[in-house]
Image (cartoon, rainbow, N blue to C red; front, side, top):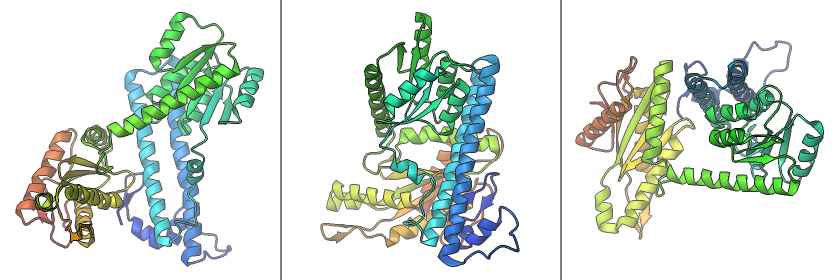
Length: 442
């Protein structure tokens, strides 16, 4: 089981937490000696997991709401924030999302160890179940018009009505909607301010926005479209036309989301492709530098894949690559990234992970591959891989993202030379503590 990381960057052992759920429940404060004792076994784990889920949900909502309040304050006092401030706020939101994702992975591990996967729904499971019903935010300060729009749309959408721009921005950042329908002129932050705030956020940059206005001039309309509004409608607008415009915007958003996923996904393995990896690598290196946290890169290369292609055909080789990807996927946390680097090479990016912890993961994957069974045409196909591990060097801007990958690649070739089927850590990786087993130091 992988190590998890707390909110302050402190390393925590998820396996110990999962196996002693009572300690996780007690960590939030002293127990009431007069209260009933916590039940042990599955019942105790269920209670601990449920309590942890509530805390995780509250933490995620609070972190994103704080980001929205900061942006709202900056925009409300001085107009849209300067690019540097908007970028900083966007990074803050990314960190909040990464924290929530890590907490989710920890909760999933707790549930799995307690045998509760099928019996204890997560707080966000309900939202996933209703994903087929689009969620709309409607911001309109006129109560009669707001009520009319909400009544007309409630039959087909989950609609939340708001009166001000600041409240709308807070709600959208806390839980991004499928579409925002907003009056251009509302108290406080107007439609353009809210639109700019959404586009600056990491999790809201693609939310479709339709603006309504009774008297917008050409300059305002052009500005709204430049900021990314999908439509600017003149009031009064018929409800029939409004529904048609909403449906078109939702269809376009779904198409863009699918195209983006296709552009960032390797078709054969279902992992991220090289383009997505490079983009994420730059972000993670900046984040590690800013907070002084560990970041480790693993390069993996399948061993002896060429004989499989030569003897059984490239279709068999493709099946072997897909099987390798499946093993990698099961070992990654929600905050990790696995990508196909090219050919028979894979790359893993592990935030909040040291080189020694990366070696543990690599050795576990090696063991899983040795246990895997793949047959093609009745013939067994062995799965083996070599790994190179490198941790981001300490110090501000001491090496580029490309240098981190290069050192992992050098360690990979050292693993190949050492006999394959093993992991090697680059000698330049800080804080290296070698685990037991055939891991070596380059």
